[in-house]
Length: 209
Image (cartoon, rainbow, N blue to C red; front, side):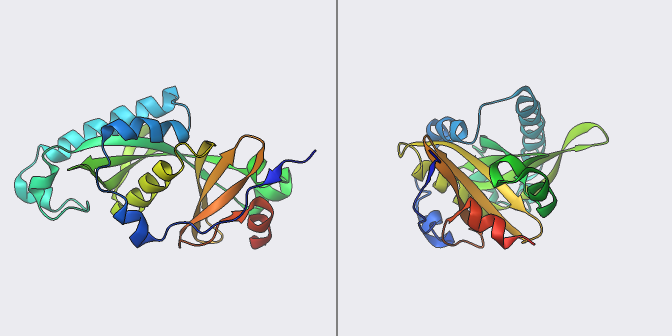
């Protein structure tokens, strides 16, 4: 019997997601990270790189901390900054779909890992780690709104039967999706950027040329 699809539902908008951030802390982060996939040696290596980079940035002057592109009002809010959940970035392309069929099978690792930055009990940004000249390196800092949305969506799915979340970038559509998988059901894909209604794998495949 073919797995049944989850009913499509509307993903929380950016404002709604950000309103859910209050009280998010390190205790919840490990659980959220578990939904985004089991830790791997590569993720652990990238986390160490991200941690060292964050510590270096926070060791600067107050003026330099104030210029960091995180969602804080002042440099003082970064005094207790720490890394939170991490996740791997996957990509989907029309080429891979033609070669492999369904969306699940066509997802490819982008070789990129992103880690939430927590400060003052809130998720305020992301550190993005990619391979540069054969070594992991932080290549992007910021994305506070996206970090908050992913944290909120992860916590919304805690305890609802979700077994796995995957961040999916579709360059040909200029959109990001969150793949939500549950036991016995076909995954659905929640639109993140721009936010919108969750769609099935078939609907996502039909959006691509």
